[in-house]
Image (cartoon, rainbow, N blue to C red; front, side):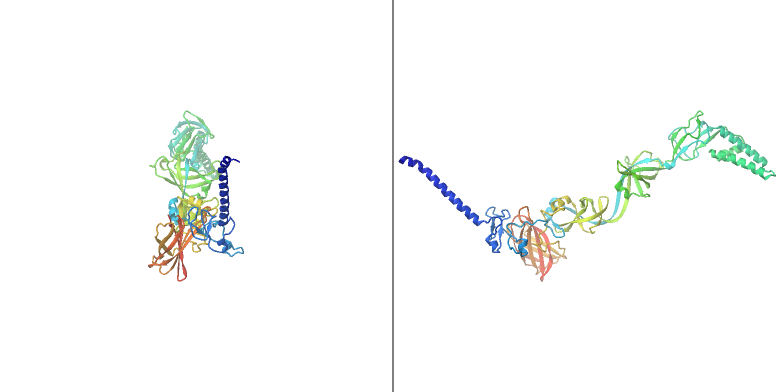
Length: 560
């Protein structure tokens, strides 16, 4: 091979050499990383030795035996908590491979959940007291004015004849009892008058007869003729006038037997022939009227006979409301509207209520005094009803209740709640969504009792105020607290422990941080606590004195 050819192949050889060198270096580097970082499911040397293991919440695969920072994201490493099997001392003692990811609700055993006051303010949580109050349910319906069917009168004649003169000559005329309606000529009436006069003369002649049966017979004939005239609607005044004049009259007058309004008329002038089958007038007494209203079937248990009811006129406010009573509930439903008809009776002074007029009907049902909350406070799942009870200091308890009737925007509570307890009235659906009332209470909650046994619920015997810091920073922070009893007196010479907790967020494991505080001034305690990351931490302050627990208080500490 010539010298020139060797010079041409030299750059190729150098490149191949460098490639082999880099490949070997990469292989040894991979072997070193594999040995330094254990594979998933294996234990590191500190874990096998029973030492504390620290991991990165964002990169759970990285573990260390020192509380350092993550080399990938520079996040503070968190000490790994042992699994349940390790805490219980199982035969296979081992630590977890990553962050603790226990399933189930992050709430206390009695279902109380925790939402920081800042978050409650952001989502618009509002509360009110459950109170004893008189409950009055109002049912509204549309009513239609109708005639009182017991006050409708039809005018007929008892004899055949011919109408001569008509006094009530149009429909709509208001008449009173005793007003003349029309005059009638009837051959039967004329002959009966003559018979009455004949019996009257006979009685006057034979009344002094020595034969008793003769005088009684003449008296009986007179009574029979008199009774026939009365049965044909001839007034007693007309009979007495006939007796005085002793002369039959060609026509007799028919009078109205009732007060009312003429709604139908068939009596006309000029000798119209009439008989007992003809309905000459229909007269309706409007001094009292019916109002017919339709009530939905779910409202029927609240409506009863004799119940007071009030009506209003929808088209004017100048007319005062009228009051009446329920007189009848019809025993059937309309299959199309699912309503039952209710009949009410009202006085009608001045004929304000006119037939076929529409009015607004109001039933007021007194439910008595009952424990009540606003309607918005109750969540109805279809089979159960719940309310969120505010336990104070950020605690909310979803509690099942038994509800009664509704009245004026309030719901009666039969059981499950006590007077004076505070319930949530706004943002209930947000709370239900976030707390997952039908399943696990996720994305919020109380510290796990496994980590904080004292955080089982709010304590009303202690008052804790965080004096410093108002806003913490990531890393070491000086904490200064003021601890008082329920009366506001400082509690001195006590053992005060501070615990920070963040619940599991997705794949990120829950984090904790603890500190013991030393007494400084009366009721004031101070110490150092490490805040792993920027977050609103659920903070538990536990107080013991003379070896006896005084209780614990939940609050929050925000770090930025």
